[in-house]
Image (cartoon, rainbow over all chains, first blue to last red; front, side):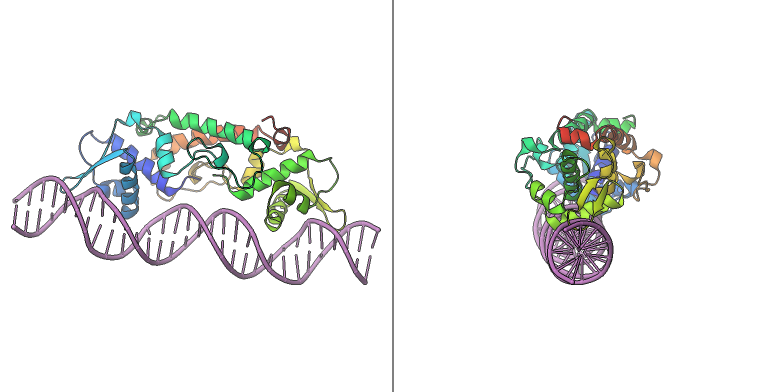
Length: 139
Length: 139
DNA sequence: GCTTATCCTACTATTTAAATAGGGTAATAT
DNA sequence: ATATTACCCTATTTAAATAGTAGGATAAGC
């Protein structure tokens, strides 16, 4: 299951992608439109800003904007920032690799090949889908 | 990420699939071979037994056996028993459907189509892979 | 009737998720 | 200048899920 953090993050990005480029959108506006706790959303947006998906403007008339065209923000990138590894087990993760602590030997693990297949399949979808696609609602 | 419960469950099934059919294997043997906490494994096997994936025999010479040929146990079935929904959001789950409580309208959700695509892709893999495939290590 | 091994319930500890609180800081308008 | 707006940041809390533990009940076999 997807965490709410990731779900909210994707919804927020999609919402921003639907707005006119270049004008800052306030957190409260996104929060209301997407039915997300304001404070929770605040922390999510901050995280995405720190990872260069968003830029922000303070003060009156401030808010958040996409840091780049929505077509250039893949779901894979968002997923990794908010959710973490795309793979189902750490030992087949490309970006978050870690040995599984119950496996003696990775090559001997009966799940290894399946986990790689699943990872590659999901990766393909996530990398070939952008926030712009979500905004168009024509995935 | 896959829970340890599911991971251990799949490993246990695979281990059983590799044994000679018809002779009961003790929990302790699986636990040692797969490096899984005995008591935790016990509860996992019990759950799979209750869901008709395993049969057991008590007393001396007892243990667990697959309830059907390994070729007939799909990963999808195991996943749903131990992990729950295969989909990433409840509102696109086939077996565990539930409305997402942040969405006003499902058809209007920007993630909906993507989530369905991901679900179908994973489902395809999980339904077309059996415990026998894992045991062969030729997924 | 003793041993073996599963069955079953309940409990606990740890971690993660999902917020919430509350003030700090910067930009803008007047 | 100063009041207001809106993001920035840290810490705390609550609830749930995960992972495992304890201890005995039950059934089968010798």
